[in-house]
Image (cartoon, rainbow, N blue to C red; front, side, top):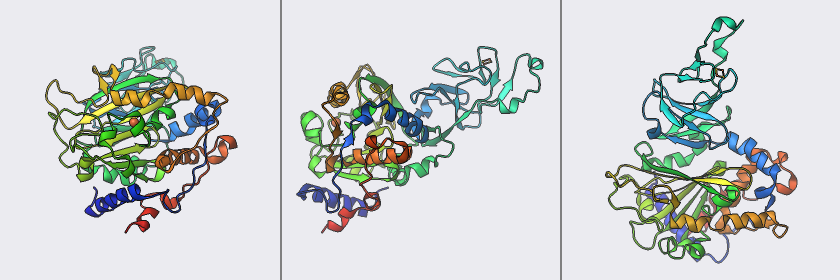
Length: 418
Ligand code: FES
Ligand SMILES: [Fe+2]
């Protein structure tokens, strides 16, 4: 929860940002981000091997697997995974790869079943992935069923959200979120229901798409009539957290009931505990590696970005809310029930394909970022540390110039207030 002191400091920081004539004292010049990070297959491979293997990734909402025995396929991170709601209420994530000869154990997108039975030769597994039944077991000599279960993937919940992580050595989800878990308490992730979830193919590297949602510098230019009237970008306050996460908070100078250009039906219930900042500002979080979500009293609407090869990606849009009336399902991001992107996201995605072509050309070498775009740089620094800096070809690295002194709760700007 945000304390009155936190809120007061944020308000002062907004005025500080509006009044400053240059980046804050001590904030470094940001070296160019090499274009190769968007087009070089070596970097793409490093991302797949490290960033997508070691990060906590949003995979499901409990509403999609509400009862024991419910399961769903999840392949957004490129690995075949089945997520199962077990008898004891736990949610488990398992590789959907039969330990006999690798057939998928589950073939429907979703279902409900007492056991998971492979359709190739009929081996069956329980909801924990233990191998329970083998046909003609007498024909396997010295066979130990106990070590032939489905391989598990780390799986933890934050409220109603199910996150997975492919790395057995990763920190817990709560450690990963750090102070953000506390700040999110007021949004009641344990009460939010899933209203809509859709996915769109884009013709650019996934980071190009995501970065359009990781700074507000672009707002006056590409959202003049949608986001801009409701978001005072000069008063935006960025906060950088450990693990590459980030937050932006910018006051909404107009209607208190609007979330930066997105009209939410007034018929939907509010998240009553949402605080003053959520109600009067755009408060948006970037969760490393691929989550961007403005949180408000109306909704928890994350957008997720998934690589689909080096020069293509998939943008997944979610809207979660406490409750709604029949036929009024809130969906912040799409038109026609997930068939088309809403106006704001059309604006955000319009240049992706062209930027990809630029990055591939000889005419573009690197990206110079401003202080306003610091969250993008911070993300890149965190990615390199996760990959292991020495594993990255020198010409593809970013320099680690944003120091620990800028990572929350540290903030040199506070010394400049008053
Ligand atoms: S591959 Fe699954 S039972 Fe043979
Ligand atoms: Fe935008």
